[in-house]
Length: 501
Image (cartoon, rainbow, N blue to C red; front, top):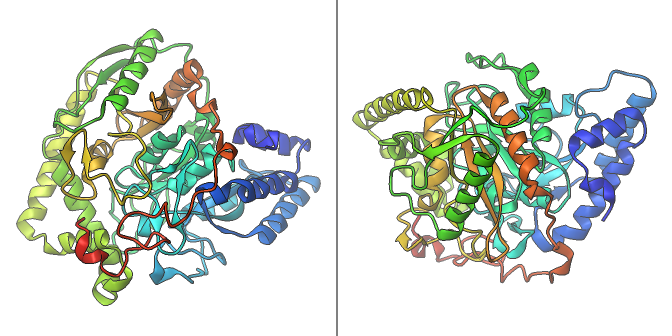
């Protein structure tokens, strides 16, 4: 493998700014790595090699002409396939959009383009980003670089797998119920779900939408900070302005974590089932944080009602965004999405009022908790990366899943609070599978959260452990497709009746 691909985005941008590395050289190495590893993990859904090299050449010309260079000058990057890239196939993993080529960039892509990123293609996602296992009919199933028969998580699973496989050092994902955090935990990388409004995420149907977030994923915390410094800031189409901007990210990290107060929860006080390997990783991380001077004790936010806040808000958002498609062409949409949309349409006024009241009570308890603690430490996922041939885990630690979201509660409960949360590596299980943790801070303390995370990262360096990807045999795409689907990862003709969400 080209040694350039082991470097951080921060290091690579520095090399290109100094003229010691060209964007074309780095972009070609990136494209070569996709060709080498993508047959094994199916992380990259679309590649625009010719366009990427043209954009890299333009970046190199800009530097040679002495122009001011943006923060991510010349950095090759695939974009999440739920994010529109002008002139590039953008499918959201759905047959309904299989040939969709948008005319305009989504806001996050436009900001990355302005920051100097060289767009090279799209990373794979579950259909419309629904669920934390990446499979769809258009491109098939993405698998885990550390174990190519296992899930890479989702919905930013293609990005997480690409990062772990050293395709690229940095990229953008999104997170409603763990879509940055679960794949980061499954793939031994970092993923940040930012505070509301730090990176605006405009919705054409709801300017006040708050549950979904856009954020970065990387192998190094400094790269998360670089990303945030490049793309954070208000958007004119949204009323909300966060009390945090691009200039707040970065700066020196503390020497240790003395004085930082951390509450540790294993089950969120809600009986969330978590398997023994994930609990062992949590304890391992707690010991590291304590050794760095932090005070760690058992404590949690009171998450009473958070399941309803998350579930009902998600259902409303799904109905608003995907309701027209479900009503007009249900045969094009997987059953889990139909269930989520129908749940949104079924909510009545009393339930909506109760959801708002529950969210308000939850925020009061969030404020109370953070009056005593600086961080909440919790499991990064409830179980190890699972068999990629299933749609979602039917049980966790012996507790049956009632819906396709139940195994994601460790992420969904935190989403309901709206708090900034970082997924961080926490070593490996006895089966040599990645395990992660979540570190949650108070609203708009994202920059401080990342500075503390740099201290933890320096003490562990788990993400430096590279998967032995090319030592694995190429998997059979049909064998890796979830049960109840065809070989491309799409529900078979009778899957609607056989599969409950």
